[in-house]
Amino acid sequence: MLLGYAPEELIGHSAYEFFHPDDLTLISQTHSTILELPDTYTVTYRFRRKDSCYIWFETTSRTVRNPQTNAAVEIHTVSRDITERKQAEQKIREQVALLNVSTEAIFVRDLDNKILFWNKGAERLYGWKNEEVLGKETPEFFHKKSTFQLEEIHNILAVKGEWRGELHKITKEGQPIIVDSHWTLVRDEYEQPKSILVVNTDITEKKQLESQFLRAQRMESLGTLASGIAHDLNNVFAPILMTSQLLELTVTDERSQEWLEIMEASARRGADLVKQVVSFARGVEGDRTIVQVRHLISEVKQIAKETFPKSIDVYVDVPPVLWTVSGDATQLHQVLMNLCVNARDAMPDGGTLSILGENIVVDEHYVRMNIDAKIGRYIVITVSDTGMGIPADTLDRIFEPFFTTKERGKGSGLGLSTVIGIIKSHRGFVNVYSEVGQGTQFKVYLPALEETQTLLVEELELPQGHGELILVVDDEVAIRKITKTSLETYSYRVLTASDGIEAIALYAQHKSEISLVLIDMMMPEMDGPTTIRTLQKIEPQVKIIGVSGLVSNDKLAKVAALGVKTFLSKPYTTQELLTTLDEVLHSK
Image 1 (cartoon, rainbow, N blue to C red):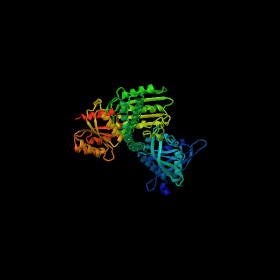
Image 2: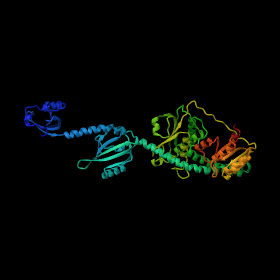
Image 3: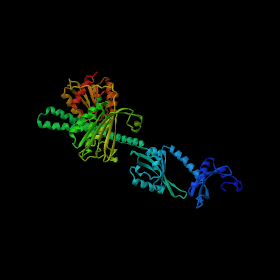
């Protein structure tokens, strides 16, 4: 029935005539070594049917031997058609070949957690070779967070037959990765669970970019809020600072002088706090010079060794030639100090503070991994500690202003937000890595200068006025009054206006006398830019100094577009005001 031959068609023919040519060698070897064969053995081979097609047989043979000579007397065989099984196996091999081409990690495990299939994509993603895992229990250690989550997945599989979600895993080398995982429960012909098919796609890079993007969005929102607060606070600090400086010139008794010093110091501290917020919010640039960060690291190392607890070892490693950057040395010094102080606070029982410097060239591959990076030369400053580490749920918030994990009164929450603001204004970026109980590492990336670049720095002197008439325009009464008093103290004449409309009227009336206009950018009735455009229509050569409690790169660009080349940030000191006035008055 299986072969289609009638008995008379086979009688007298050798069985070798019907075997597949590729199987003849196997059959011949089996028969030639029949005395050496075990009592029972199985052979698979192909046999030609009457229609010339070959079918697969699995033949199990039992050898009957002479008890005295051990010679084979008879061979009893039972053959069964396994063609369908062989076709299924071939189909599986073809599917395996296709699965191995896939970039996704695909594996199958039985209900006892033993690996039945492990494709090339899984080898590439996890690092374990097929022979290392096949037939063994699923390496559950490659699940990073897991027991509870895996139990939940199995429960969902039992009910719905599939599950999809994100999993945190560990590779053979210990590298954490994130995968988009799709689990399918495979059932047998009786609809009973047989195995689990798992398809994992590596989304680590995607998740890193998403995290950076969401963090950038959150920081931008906080920056907008912080900018508005900064503007209002600077309008408060400006008259306090200038008033205290003026009173120091007129009040002579020692006790009053002490009070004035306290008032001025407090105002300066408040103003510095606001500048930190502004720096974070909009990336305000300080004075740019060529900075050799190697020298800054040396200074910070000295401070740390002299002031930090003796239980903290300070280790510094900087190459002899560290590329230079264009930056504000004071701000970069502040970045290093903030990071070192945070490291100190993370090691109350002592540890090691490491400061490393290196030159690197960021390539296209790294740029794809970090949205803030650009192809080119960078210096990298790494500040790391062996302290308590930062929990994962806190790590994404550490750069937010006013966010702190320190006890009340021991931190303002502005240290790291200042760091990120300053570094962003220098066109750099910061990466942070932390493990609870192991420590934290901050890597600061700053674009390096080409070796031929140079910057010049001018030194300014404090001047006196010579009776020049200055128009002061500000909607804050206190600022108008104290600015007027300060300028008059240093031999200037002053007119004041509370808004743009009044300023235009006064300028039109005293156009020939007014030497310069000091104008606030943000006023309710008519804002600074609108007023400036109107004044320029009256007198195209009018000299103007823009003033605001909120200074950003965008704001500076808008003012510069109006032809205003000088800008004062509130709160400004009397010295800053006089120096800027003299510079603009005597410019061509």
